[in-house]
Image 1: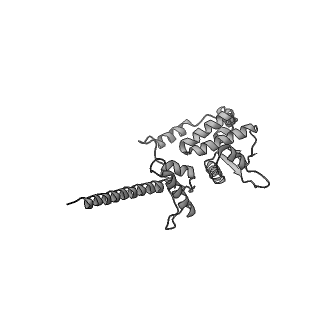
Image 2 (image 1 turned 135 degrees about the vertical axis):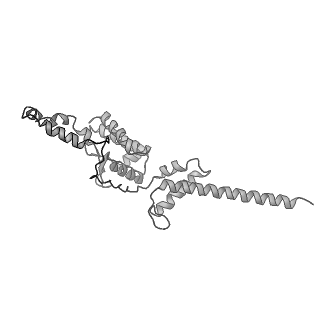
Image 3 (image 1 turned 90 degrees about the horizontal axis):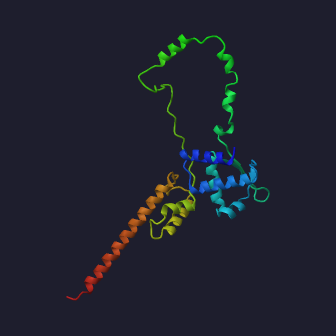
Length: 234
């Protein structure tokens, strides 16, 4: 596996597993560090070095590497702050591990090709039995797969700010208030239910703040108009 193949693998996985800019930034940083170590696997990488290079907090680094692990791009071994740094492994998908697997699959085919003639009548009968009016007949024995429930991963403060950006006059303060409010609750609602879609809750927060600000401006305007009317003589 070389640098180009790993980059192509990243974009292939990203097609069906969307990633944030922070996840991509962190992954390509790990690729660079692994390449500098001549593709040593696993390789040690102190968290303080990541902080110095990327400016991410320890919590953000922990969240990012957990997400990349869930998406099959890396694996890691937790380190000990005093004794040993964390170790990282750049994972390679099964499709790209052995470039010559197709040749191995054909090792014994030549002997079968020179043996007894195939029973063409039997094959023809199978073809007729499987024929139907449907291009892709439905396999009635196949049961629908259940959707796996995705594990909730708390957002970073940067991701929350990207949702709030420019949507409120004090969007930075509101983004931080939203983040620390739900972070203090363990990302649960006031009823104790686990948060499933934090971005939807952030949009609801923004709408409520816009409505509150609009009602406040209307009240201020009404108060101002009433003051003008009362101060007018006659």
